[in-house]
Length: 427
Image 1 (cartoon, helix red, strand yellow):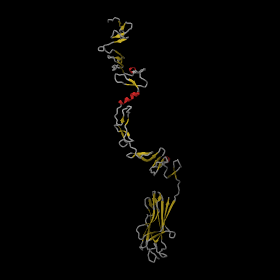
Image 2 (tube, helix red, strand yellow; image 1 turned 135 degrees about the vertical axis):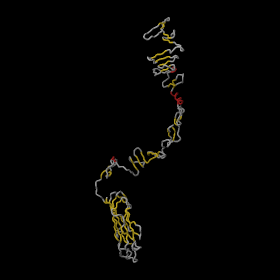
Image 3 (cartoon, one colour; image 1 turned 60 degrees about the vertical axis):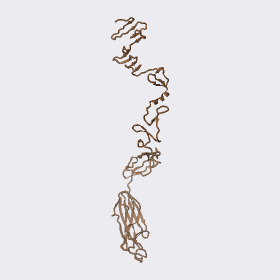
Image 4 (tube, one colour; image 1 turned 60 degrees about the horizontal axis):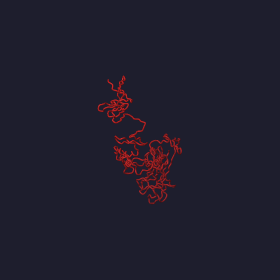
């Protein structure tokens, strides 16, 4: 090896480093040049010389590189720009594109390729955002600029809604197609709504946040029902259904009633008495004439009922013969019966509700008057198998045997004794 004038070599073992050291005062080092401009000066021919400067880790990982085009890479073996860093950059000074650090609150605005970005005020940047807005949905309008901000297009009618139809947003009226039921035109405040199949409208349930009314818009209690209440389950005040036979006893205001067993009591009797005025049963009639109708009487399951019908019957004073003194209707009779308006719920204990034939004998004391008639009575008894409401009726049918002109007269009043029906209920 031959040394060049003013140069010397240094060899370091085990690594051999060739150092070309100048003997000049500046102690400059040149690689590829004999005229170093700095303490270390590397000069290379881009068409002939390999990568001029590279620092690697053991194993070949590149930490710093200057390629043949002059681009610098930090942890990047193939820098694409003048400085290409693979990794985070941290710094404590200002970021100064073009030597400008900007002012507080400004944002960095790109100026495109090959031109440094600029610090700009936010207000100046805002109007440019519209260029970045993609308008794809018909209900969305505007481009995001100050003069044309983004918004929702107006609907056709008041109450229109924005609906996602599975593909896009649309402004629609509420209804079946939108899946949102419309509110009926008669909607009123505080009424619970229900779907009628066409729209969402009022029910009969009113709720004002304090009380609930069913059938009333002025509920006075927590639950106020205007109308009948029907239910098939137990009535359970305070969670208690009671025992069979218990009765519900009030405990006063703001306290639930309670079920209590009644003390055992002896049976009691309820007696109704019905009396009829004079009534005539016409000649040879085949239809029954009503004498007494009690009207509705409520009977309870388990009641024992006895019907006692009694009275007087005689021929009318217009019976023949012509002398009007002595009348004789022979074997004529009146068929008397006591019937309920329906047999449902009644079990007969007295042989059925068939009629009885009542005869009377002849006799008389004066013109156009018969001294007496025949007394009659009928007794029927039955039990009640279920709660029922019934009317009991006394009826008569006259059968003239002796004289077609003779007919029956049912008498009442103090003198004759009235036609009477007694209804006796043992409960």
